Length: 197
Image (cartoon, rainbow, N blue to C red; front, side, top):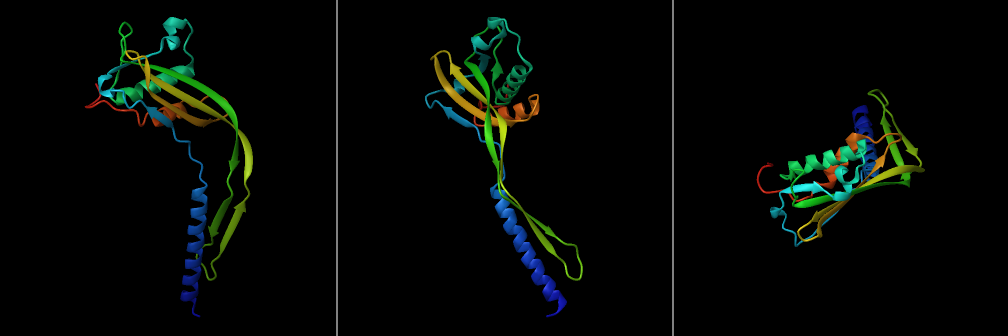
């Protein structure tokens, strides 16, 4: 057997091994959980133009200061709804829909998947390949959840409900993570017809 054919067969075998390992590891990749949403089929979202916060979450009603995390959540929700064509109601007016959100966190057990790693040697007379395997493990993580309820005050009925969760890092809350989670949460929220006001 001459060297070019030998190298070609070795390259094909290594390429097949790499593809197989990629298929295994991609199936085990950890992605953020998808949001869960539900919409009232009777709700006429085209009639809604403005939104406001529930009285129990209003700083004027409670007299309590808004935390940095709450401020970030509200700003992210406001930005996403404005992007979809809605307006925040002025303080002295009644909004078309009222927003009420809750947050929470819990400790959960997370398992890391079985992984395969493949390495290929440089160009040379004999070439080479190596494979490594890591075993699965278990660790405790903190998961934060955000639940958003949208209420039509005219009907006193919930018209949309959504929840999203994310794994939280140690220490303070990552504001970028909050904004990303809110964007995912409101991705399926009905947009108003026409460009944002």
